[in-house]
Image (tube, rainbow over all chains, first blue to last red; front, side, top):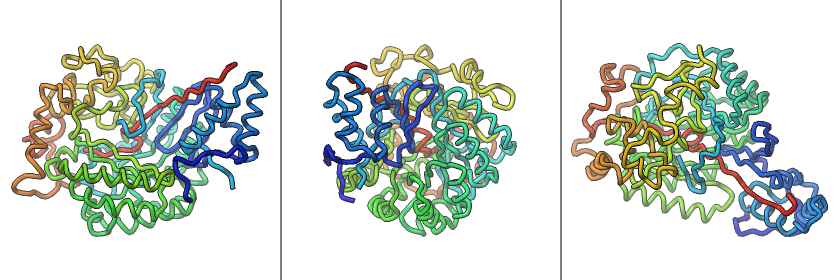
Length: 96
Length: 413
């Protein structure tokens, strides 16, 4: 492994959750949460939605397009931005 | 307590996000910085399996998410697998906080099957002699074998290294060993000085130069390793001029259940003898948290006195640690003396000025039954001369509760 925090995500990359992070719907928070050693991240609605698409079957571009279609507004850039943040934080990884 | 990259927050919405179950105070190791009470041996009435299961259900109903099975050594409980299975069924993220003693491959397999999510293993040094000396037991070989088996079985793993004067210069070797094992999170946890660690403080406290050198090595390793290993360096609060935001506030997002069922805002809270902590044996957990005087004693800022009361930073650090204020100043409503604004700050600075250890070194008082006379327990312990006062490391889960909220707002949402 040679990845570093400066790696960028290509549009074609298939992305999946890093197994170190458990993504789950949490009723008491009425939100998706990420659970990992020593941490909890509460995701807002859209962040949670985007991560549920990260199953290793869709590319970054496909995820952005799918979410974009659901909103009827141009949110593609923001989805891409979020995926880059999630990647930099190690929540998601690329599938080889 | 806060770590790099984490921001203290009270945004738990009144929910005890973190539950730590100290299943037992029994332990095969004798660490001189143990955070268990000095009279640990007098608590023999551990909750039984059904009682722990009731605690888990009640806490989950309150919205608890992160669960740590701790101790003492939790592997000494034969019902650990059963408790993990129940916790998983309830929807907790289950963490095992262990010394590695008794963590055989067979039990690891059973814990995996029960749904255990991650393991935090303690290691005191990169080599056998120093490790075994620091814990006063033959432990290194077992710990290393446990570490490798944990990774072989695919658990996420935190390697927790309690840092004191005796092992801080081993930082580079520990980094190399952790890399070789393939740990996911390496946590250098500067010892916090309560209980046994406070007793041994004059022997355990590293020098500022040692701390700075270790921090520099950690910074270099972070750059080199990137995402491969996350390295935490739990802040040594004695060397700071502001206190830690202890537990993110009293009775906020953290809940510890001691082996005998006593409910505590943190595992050290029993040192404040004026408080009477309720037991889950006779009071529902929700009632304890919401209504008990002990859990409400230091909530909010109404209890504060100056300099905290008028301090613009009071919502960032909540006045620091109540237990540390009590142990070092005799009054839990005082500012944590770590704070440079505290009128008692000399209680910290004088310890640091005393340099690295007393003129005449004395042996560490290892955690053993009867090692400390009962007359020295509790309130009496604060009357010990300052250079012979004792702690904790519970880094990890216990002092590091963080609830962060990621906000990504999309148009049309």
